[in-house]
Image (cartoon, rainbow, N blue to C red; front, side, top):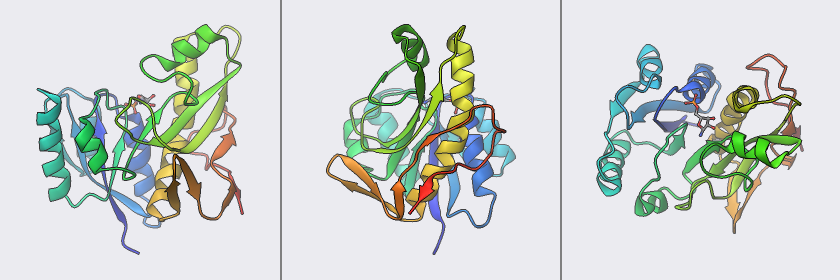
Length: 224
Ligand code: GRF
């Protein structure tokens, strides 16, 4: 099967982009990144794309519809199958989002639907939860909403601050996002109503991960 063509939207650091680039470097991985779009010219993630030989483009965010029109044209030109939001910090135009329904996903550093929006790690610590984590979901026009594809649990620890919890979750994000994109690219992810079903997975993509494991450690999920 041809590899799925992925477009990644970023605004900043790009560490999840890097995790996807690394996953795509394996010829057996069912997806390839064909373009990276940033709304900020100074996003460090653009250099990661360039270093990997991936087409990168800056589309400054003037208005929501204008950004959407330019992004849409680019993604079509690049024959993108799947759009991945990876630290893209803007709310997208609702028509654009609907046009990519179930073909656009996002990673968020909490166990949604808990703690959507900004500073989810700070929200988690303020709520005193013992576990937080990260979620990959299909995108809907509402912020951080949409059918959940994959989640991973990360413990909070006594003495955590926003930075320490964010770092612990981020290490797990880098393993979860490539897994979720792989499942989508393999054609195994179906949206049924407001939920996702994954062919061939019994206890799908909800993994209790050891955050102390080496980054890049493959995710063990129960395969049926
Ligand atoms: C990640 O925590 C991601 O979950 C959130 O924004 C952050 C982006 O980090 N949506 P990076 O740019 O991928 O390093």
